[in-house]
Amino acid sequence: MTVKNAFYAQSGGVTAVINATACGLIQEARRHPGRIGKLFAGRDGIIGALTEDLIDTSLESDVDIARLRHTPGGAFGSCRYKLKSLEQHRAQYERLIEVFRAHDIGYFFYNGGNDSMDTAWKVSQMSEKMGYPVVCVGVPKTVDNDLPLTDCCPGFGSVAKYVATSIREAGYDVASMARTSTKVFVLEVMGRHAGWITAACGLASESAGEPPHILLFPEVPFDPERFLARVDQCIQKYGYCTVAVSEGLADASGKLIAEMGSKDAFGHAQLGGVGQIVAQLVKDRLGHKYHWALADYLQRAARHLASRTDLEQAHALGVAAVDLALQGKNAVMATIRRLADAPYRWEIGEAPLADVANVERKMPPEFISADGFHITDACRAYLQPLIEGEEPPPFRNGLPDYVRLKNIAVTKKLGVFEV
Image 1 (tube, rainbow, N blue to C red):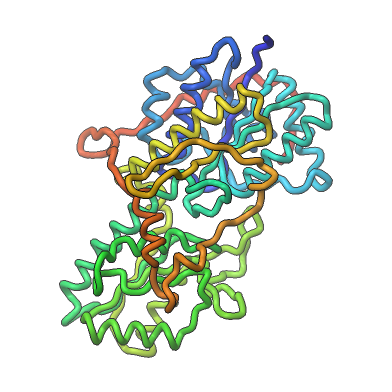
Image 2 (image 1 turned 180 degrees about the vertical axis):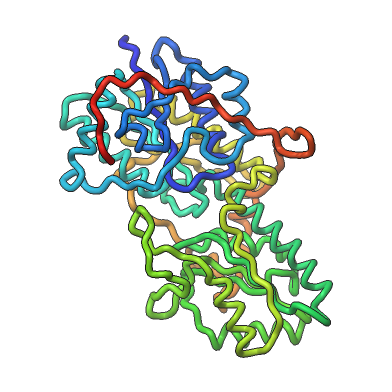
């Protein structure tokens, strides 16, 4: 049997556990020296493949690879760079295959979200058309939890744990000061079109009156009057009000409340500041003092508070990606399949990349309360196991002790390619 090399790349926004996936994938590849030669990683994601900037992971020690499990961020660098259709970007797809051919790469592992699964699928198509077979396997990752055909997405459980913890702690703070100071606290979390992270904040409220009192989802059109009435009701009843809001909150016409007018590299609207807008609305209309916070990168970088469930699934999916590739499973994504809620049981599955690419899974209506301001028991049953368990990183001198790999590049064999 011919031994082929492999290529792995991280894509899009990184998470607290994406390196755990890389850890599992590299460790599993090393267990099959007779099937997989070297495993190269793309420096800064798919750009590393296009520019032939390949990292030789065989030069990293087993100890350092194992330390990836505890390290946040993207160990090899990531990027927001979308390859469009084969017709529009044919030269780029051809370049990928050219690089793969030059370095004898027969396996392509792409670790990312919706757009990344689309890229992996297209690469599988192009490799077939160009007569150079490459087994392409998608490895899910996204804090937004919006990939279809998988129970959940690695990265989400840890973000969910972080935001639920943060709003619970902030709730204690606001409750302490509400009589003479801040009465309204707003936490803005990620979530462009899907409210999964906002929903996770709702886990902090285990009984009536506990924060957060209001959740604002992208799936529910924002009605300022209904919102203000609920804020006023909470303050009258509890003395204060805490709110979690998705960055992608929109009005009835679909216009984003916080759209800044610019676009990111994937062509998505650049968002930010909806928390301040909502908080200022309360101040202007009801007169209450407020504070607001933007979880931003903190929510997805917080490895110190990662969910053990999330960590275990992230690592397992890296292992599974290699196993699927060695079985010859091409153009598939490794998935999580839920077997039971309590106790939570799951197994590894797979889904065709063609069915995953560019499909967003939003919050189902049955997960949102009838009034649109909170989560249902069904949602809680789904979310709860995803945040459970702790596996803190090692600490040194009072701070998390993370690894930085050497990331030594492979000698280039081809000409320069501009991206």
